[in-house]
Length: 227
Image 1 (tube, rainbow, N blue to C red):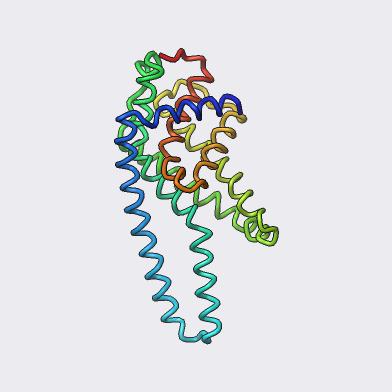
Image 2 (spheres, one colour):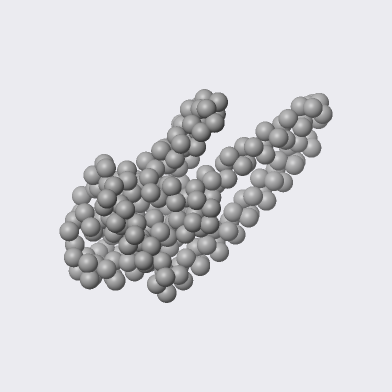
């Protein structure tokens, strides 16, 4: 965890860099646009469904509306992360290359160029893991609702595992000769990244911050000298 904390602090220092800020602005604008479109689609689909459920009584219709609203609220974090993963997949190589070039120039010189096709494949693979992993965990989420706090804690742990895997794949795409992260490094990387997604306002920075942190985790673990 100490290595992950160090990587997190280094990633925070990368945020004010002009190129990082430029990518952040682009990715954030696209993320908010996709979120707005997704939210509008869910809203109008829900209104249409409620309007056409004529077989339901008024009380049942009200209960269904409340349930759908609660599900939308509960799933908003997951929706944001899903959209953010797809968006950051489009910009990931630029962030990784920029952080490597400024901090680990020797490693950057040996890196493999990652094209936009591979970025999209990585993003889609991450999205599939996100949806699949959370669907598998859904019964546990429901069971833990009675505890009040159990569901968000378990969701954090599940998504920490998924994010650690996604971020590892993103940085290793440029360094296919490097071995995978050890389990503790992948877990701590995923946990800090997943936690940053649940903090209001900070979650807007979370995708870029997580990408930069993954770069530092890779090179700190391999002893690459910082330049």
